[in-house]
Image 1 (cartoon, rainbow, N blue to C red):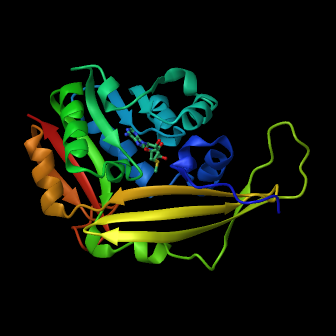
Image 2 (image 1 turned 120 degrees about the horizontal axis):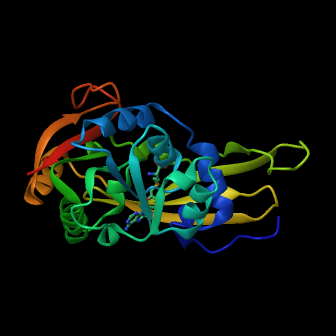
Length: 260
Ligand SMILES: C[S@@+](CC[C@H](N)C(=O)[O-])C[C@H]1O[C@@H](n2cnc3c(N)ncnc32)[C@H](O)[C@@H]1O
């Protein structure tokens, strides 16, 4: 063991070695199928993927024929996204919602709970206003946020248990011993729907990395009110990836709203 690094905010997305772990943990799933299908429901082909991360869904949207822009503030994640096959079909932007051009999109997506990273109400309102400005009238906003009633964070708390993540061999390398990262999670704070946590990683090289983050779990009525206040009509809120009612699906609030 070569020592423990200090915790870095959102290192999960910002440090190349942890971005590789993120991709090994987050492979294509039913949420991606859901968003890929929803992206066809806008008035045209121009899709904004805010918080696109390493671009798993972003490149699939482009491969499906959409004109896609992916925006993310994390350089290391965008670097990984740009290396994906098909990445050249996407416009990648290092930035935030403030960098989205006005009136340029038919669909705006925030996937894998990007919406929960906007913790303060004024920050969330600002992002929604930026997305409304980025969409044409009649454009759709589609995002997921976890239902606080499901209390998902309670099952994340495993500071005494390690969950192994197997990394793929680097390209061009001869297959060797599997590179395994031991991961864990510690919830460090919980108040009024705001949850602080630390992710821990024991790397194959023997050192430990820590990543901190804070997520906001907004209840359905607050989500609806904030989206409507930004100039959208909320058309649907589902509880799971098969469009189950809220409370019966996967503990999600899946919002579909139209720019008015
Ligand atoms: C859980 S990841 C989701 C990434 C991707 N959408 C996916 O499906 O894998 C959250 C992403 O939100 C990004 N993010 C964090 N703060 C942000 C902000 N202020 N504006 C836009 N994106 C942000 C992170 O860099 C990270 O890539």
